[in-house]
Length: 227
Image 1 (cartoon, rainbow, N blue to C red):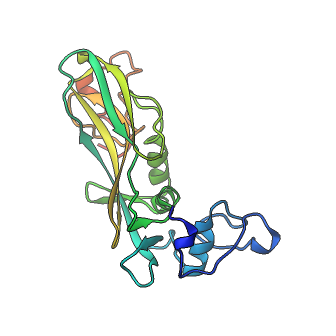
Image 2: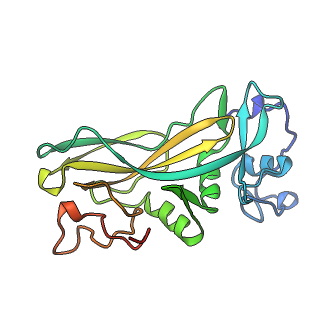
């Protein structure tokens, strides 16, 4: 988040938890707030839960510099390199990099989480409601190759992988596009398999806990999306 002293457009000075500041407003809690963004959203009327969700952004080339801008979230599997050509230690990059001194979503993590509640795009189709929330939560849960992913700035993990478990590592990526700001990728859940996964994170029927598990079948039959 940018320093408050750079904010020359807003006058909100709410303090979370004080009696006078417990207002009802979207997109966050109905009473009391944990971050200054919530107060700013109230003043600017940014609404992360509308049909076209908007979030608070900062752009030093805009007038005013703080504005509500539309955000859209999509999800997809991405094949990582190199392939698993032998038993080896494999390093995966996770998290996101949304830091820019000239332009940014003011509270990227909180804003993205709220917008996902409306749904996300996968393979040109929108998935929403409970499906969207569960997929989002699952994408930060423990994967079949790597442990729980943190929704945080970029970091790296290294773990042993074995050739017999599949020749490729696939990573679920949330692509967060904000109008006038650009796209930020959030790198999450990973699966080791021969073919590109067909399921959302956590929605595979053929996971590694099954006795007849085979690498080429992993994440190929799903509860979501149906196949």
